[in-house]
Length: 197
Image (cartoon, rainbow, N blue to C red; front, top):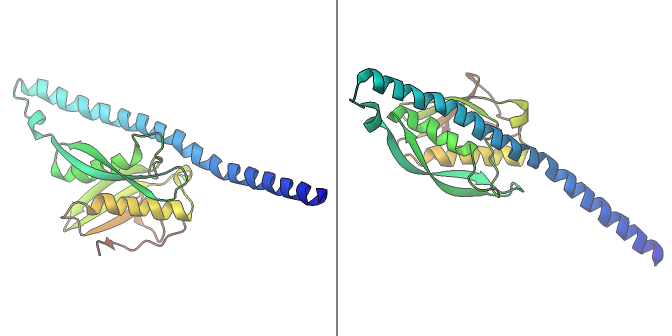
């Protein structure tokens, strides 16, 4: 009897240790999401400075301020276990209609709640161009942005859900550094383009 208790105790200890080890990589992307917020703020700060400079050059016309459009959209994150997507309503602001899609994608990088995990936090978004019903997303994927099979599937679902909420978007084409790839992170096959239906 004592031997069985000892064996069960060791088994429980091993299970606890192995499940704890599985959560360590998830903690690192949360820290990276904070870096993405900082990077995004750094990127947006010069953009907000540029319109101010042009306003002062144009005088009191202020033509850039009325051109800013604001829209309420849904964006998607996951829980710390990467089990499901969490829909969150966010507000985006963009200067022109063609900038709307990149602004929407950037919301995927910064969760507003500590219990949410960004699947796109370390991905570098280059562009999101809309033409003939298709949004072509060009991005860079550093090694630290790569997720497992489940995370990759959720990341693609979050991308599709975010962009397909715009009625004019009928397809999405994802490029890595300007090149079509078979798979984004090595697990889920990409079609070029991914259609709404």
